[in-house]
Amino acid sequence: MKKRWITVLSLLLCFTLLFTAAAPMTAQAKGNSTLDLPDELKVAVEKFANLVIDAVNRGLLLVRFPWKAKTDRTVDLSKFTLVFNDEFEGDRLNGRFWNHHDQGPRRGGYWDASQTEVRDGKFIIKTSYREDGAYGPGYYSACIASDYLVEQTYGYFECRCILPAAEGLWSAFWLMNKNVGKDGNPGANGTEIDVFESPHWYRGKTGRDNSLVTSNLHWGGYSLQTKYRNVAIAKANNPYEEFNTYGVEWNKDGYIFYVNGEETGRSKAGGVSQVPQYMMLSVEVDGVNSEPYHGWSGIITNNKDGQLPAEFVVDYVRVYQYNDLL
Image 1 (tube, rainbow, N blue to C red):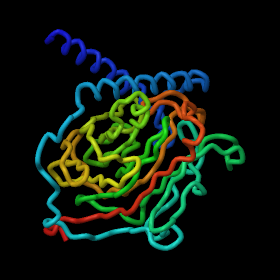
Image 2: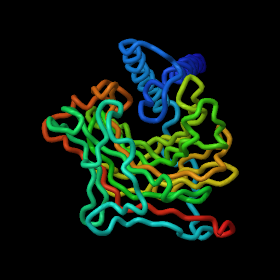
Image 3: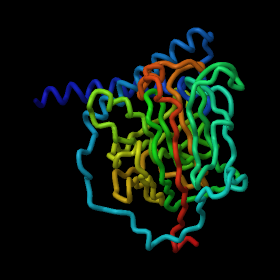
Image 4: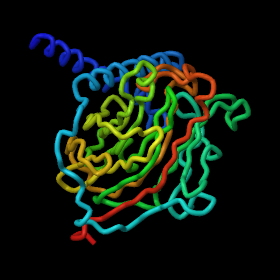
């Protein structure tokens, strides 16, 4: 038994090293790789990276999945003051809070502002196939960000949402800083903080638990120097049909991740960010060069008729600051 676990961990280490080398090729809109490769070879490397990321994720599901909460700790909101909230009222996105981010080619599809709407007090990103899309036929989703509008150092950041129910895509709530894409950037100067990502819907097709989200940290740029740490793989409550909350508490000592107010993991990997960061809400389509390809969320072309369009429905985003920092 012990030898089996050593083998598993060794394989994971190999996959992680491969992932570290290949990850920049999957970060098309986040930063550019330092590798100068012919286009055909670059696409091949990106496809290989997708497969490696899927292998790493499957290994982490075996090793890291907490069948029950590791702790009984819950978020203590009494030490915070609410300083920002968007309840998505009205009939359009509030331009004082959000920008439509990086429109155009993104992984296996495209990001386009026309895939978003505010409806019945909810913000919605719709993922669908469009023959008449602005960038040509393909799969379209979107991303919004609060850069230059709502940025903060430290605090508690939370969103309440329903995840999009389809294979080959994943939604995310994450914090970013412009420095993250710079090669060799230390985590203290800006870290990609993935409060949650939701690539596991495909597991439900074979009867496995697909109510899982993953929380991750990235720093050091998006080239060969990129660094990555999975902090938690945690269980939500029927997340494709019901609202759950996903949050991160961030202070000088580290990051603490929560699902429905219950702690799922904590880390200070890379050196804790000490600079203002902005928020992002997005849906990604797995693939390369705007074409679907298998990755950690499966492949979008495997969906049955009627599965798309899929909607990422956000009820609110709230930001708190520590009382003693106000």
